[in-house]
Image 1 (tube, rainbow, N blue to C red):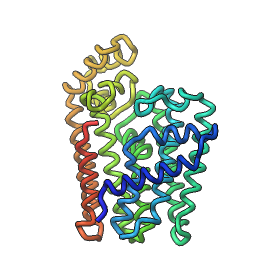
Image 2: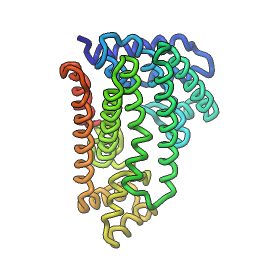
Image 3: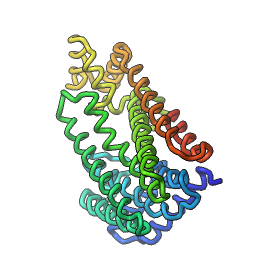
Image 4: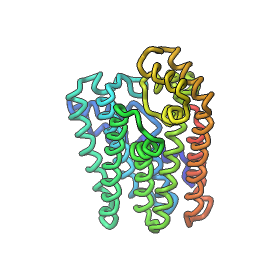
Amino acid sequence: MRTTQDFQALIDKKIEGFCRKNGDSNILQPVNYILNLGGKRVRPLLTLMAADLFSDDIEDAVYPAIAIEIFHNFTLMHDDIMDNAPLRRGHATVHEKWNRDVAILSGDAMLIQAYQLIIKTRPECLGEVMHIFNKTALEVCEGQQLDMDFQSRSDVTIAEYVEMIRLKTSVLLGGAMKIGATIAGASESDSESIYNFAIDLGLSFQLWDDYLDAFGDSSKTGKQTGGDILADKKTFLMIRAQEKASSKERETLSQCAAGTINGQQKITTTLDLFKALGVDAELQSEVERYYNSALQYLDRIHVAEERKTHIRQLALALHHRQF
């Protein structure tokens, strides 16, 4: 029986080979650079786990799994440009290390390379895999656009925010698992169940990320506590606080956003308000709700329970993570 470590070793080996074939051309050096910055490789891992859930042969899912990881890193490269982010995984972003034009062009090359790998899918399921991949890729772009739109809006609702993170984060997890399931010959109902499992797991994951940014231990998260607050990001905590705040509390939040209250005082004041309004507890409740919903979808899949072990373990690890 394969282990999670077996899947991860296979993914690392394939990405290493992919980078070696890229060589050191000017356009592909940044591709190799961002792929070698590490990361959890969750998306290709989910692709292989989904294939393994329904079949003992996962070989046909390997190239699509790597394609999904390359596509994910392509989106990160372009997102970093739009966010003017200086760091990615503790290292200089591509546009900082090279320049903006190089990052745009190398990102474009990554997207093309992702498609080159996707079309290695065996012919009988290539059409469906391409459909899932294309739909997912477009939705990720829509999610990023919503995130950018929210920056200039003061009336974002919780429903809108959840839809944004569904598109920006969850659909790629769902697409990754559905592609793995499709290649492995899963039924339509089981493919939908594994997709919905990943969607709700992704929502739980991203909402918990909001919580860790505000209340996590910076020595474990590797990020400054309250980074989203300093950046005036629309998060579940901030949106819900604005909805529940009294006029006086709303004025305090406005002063923080305007910079009248800034720095560490801004973080402390905002976190105190989050706690006073109880939005931290509400967020934790939502994290649990989506996580439990994800497990219910996993329960519906018609395979032996032991085949679900690795997926349950990964879901639990992501759910309890402190970074």
